[in-house]
Length: 211
Image (cartoon, rainbow, N blue to C red; front, side):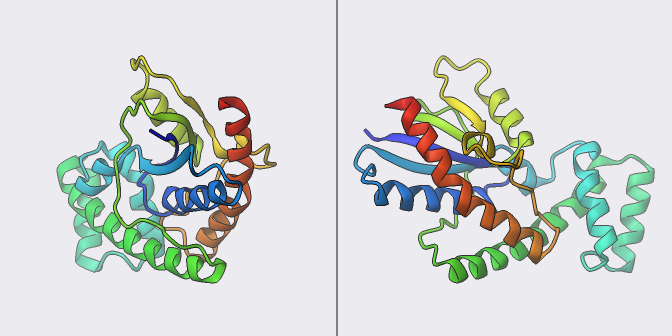
């Protein structure tokens, strides 16, 4: 059984799947793919699909969509504002689910364009929820929020892999890889380029600690 290195973000859509593909490619380049493999997941995949979250979680994304102005029509915007004023998570969740699907589709388009530009192949389409996996030796999260999510998931697990933000593992000047969800093409490409730079360095660190 190969040792697994897992890339984790929030929704397992824009950042961790490319990070997984970069890790797989790098492991092959350095001749470690017979011993190691890479996977990816998201700490809140099921939540982003159902909208089953508290308003406090949904609000930042909703505010972003309202600022953009291209997600909701006039009636939907009015209904959403009423739902927020009434503090009705179920009604807000309906609109949240719509914006999530719109942002996911947008992000996948950016991802495909970035993969073509930078020659990255093999990026998976499925979105997987992060779970405790005894075959995982290290988890590199894309940001601090994903780090907190992974730490919560592994809180009571007997198996404890290395868990750290990829930027820290890479010795980067940055604290994390920005969550560009819903923030436009340039923000996504900036995150993608950072993944290309940091994941191989993080892999080197992980191999040094697990061999």
